[in-house]
Length: 440
Image (cartoon, rainbow, N blue to C red; front, side, top):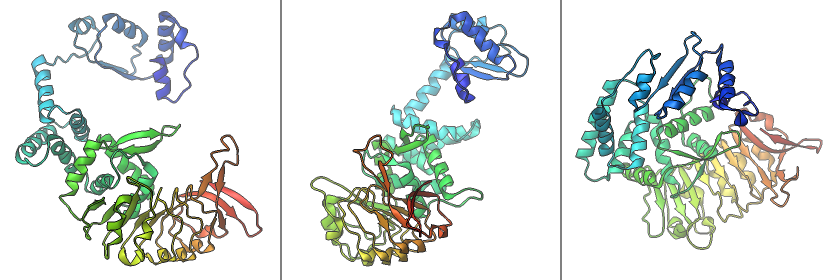
């Protein structure tokens, strides 16, 4: 408890608490809380002795502090004579409530978690809980084409605010069991136009709030965090992804995963292509897709552009073009004709030179060159005044502890025109020939 109080207040945890005896621990905590107002919740207390020790450690300082405990042991409740209020919940009510939730969720833990996330958005309004229960029952009884888990998750989906729905469905454009960089996802959401402006906030801030809500609703899982606790990667459970795909089929124009033996739907707005489907990809004549993402499939990596020339003529409406991790060694001049393009990723590719035509991509917001072979950016890039994120450095993994492990790319002077820039990681070459690192 001592350590937890200090962590909650972002204070250093006192040294030596692990070796203190019980009396010293109690005295230390009482002294710490002596003039503080606090609220503590103890859930499912079983030990009478433990509770007696806890009571000694928490001072009654008459300044509005509160202690809440839940227990199934009547002797703990009866022994707590100082308590102001007791609430006894009949066992049959507890049993009925649990049985009701479990039966509605088909006994599936994932569905129970999803429903829990859904209930958290309803606050303490009993009428809202009852309305949810009634609607859920109706949905489960009427839709016989969906599995129980999909029914539950589809209900959670339709309870989402309208602006979060396409963000959630977008997870279906990534392969199964794939963890996704949160920053990548957020920049793609922005490029797709899913994120709505809010006064006093950047689009990145708003998108972070969208992702937070999806996580709080238990629809998305955090799979990796940075050392400072900030989320780094996220994913959806494979069962939830299947539910996303089923939900997606209700709107056949939302997205399509192009795999071997797939048939192409020219109306799909978001197209993901496996490398074993490049022959199908190469046959596309006209697409209304807003996003085009490539993923390595089974077999040897291939260059998708060898099967599909004149990309700009076939995909005239593209906003997102993602080659990350693909066997790509050359970016053609034709990329400059993709007027609507907002997101271009060459991360982890073998591309060395950027075509000067990129200066025509006046709507480009994100240019990701991380871990590519690009070492210099053409001066034409300075014309891209809407650029929000430029990620451009590589790492020499052989120099594990060297200050020169990270190598930026050279940007010609003139970046002061990028008034919308939110993220810049690179190296600037000034007019005098000197270089300086830019890490924002």
